Amino acid sequence: MSPSKSISIRADNKRKDNLPRHIAVIMDGNNRWSKQHNKNGVSGHRAGAVAARNLVEHCLNRNIEVLTLFVFSSENWLRPKKEVNSLMALFLNVLQKNEISKLHKKNIKVRFIGSRERFASKLIALMENAEKLTASNTGMTVVVAADYGGHWDMANAAKVVAEKVELGEIKAKDVNEDVVGAHMALADLPMPDLCIRTGGEQRISNFLLWQFAYTELYFTETYWPDFDEKEFEKALEDFAGRQRRFGKVSDQLESV
Image 1 (cartoon, rainbow, N blue to C red):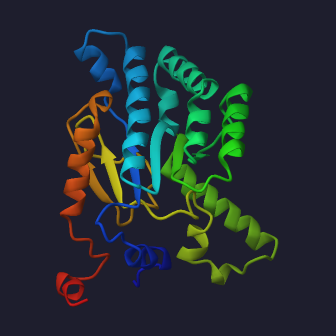
Image 2 (image 1 turned 30 degrees about the horizontal axis):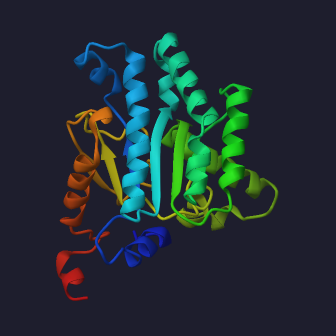
């Protein structure tokens, strides 16, 4: 199978300073951090929100183009109702505060990916307002994955493509990787170069399944609230030491 266009484009656009253009983060370990510090579960999520805010700053300082944060997965609705309600309240609180206006002043574009059907109307309105306010910003892009799942993303793309086939806008024989990929979340952004997962687990938990085809994975035992600039630099250093072949062999890259 030949590599898709999206993969080849990303390989050609690697940054010369060997830093990732797009970093995706699975922010895990908030509850365990709370238990470790003898605090209630909500405190871990609050501390995690602070860590997310700090990571945006670190990425700005490193000129990272895109940061995608896995805030709430499709499966997180299965958690205890009290925790889900607390997470929704925290999400609402963050959007109601000056967080978005602060990002806007720094020329940061904010986007949300995922299904919005199960969110409260007030929360949906705040998400839409944040996107509208920052839509014209030309700096770094912060993507918030909320009620997002990789399976949902692929099924949604397939549904849109199927609808276009039914309407005669595209022929079934012309459906290929590029057509499907163009309807995935983040289709207009560089593919994730690096995925960081905190908390010690080594899996991607239904996050950006399509987009992670050639993403470098970095796992750390550090709980998310403790993931500071020092830990971030460790991840960047690890990434810089990897050879990204995109299906080729080492000799082909060394001869370029």
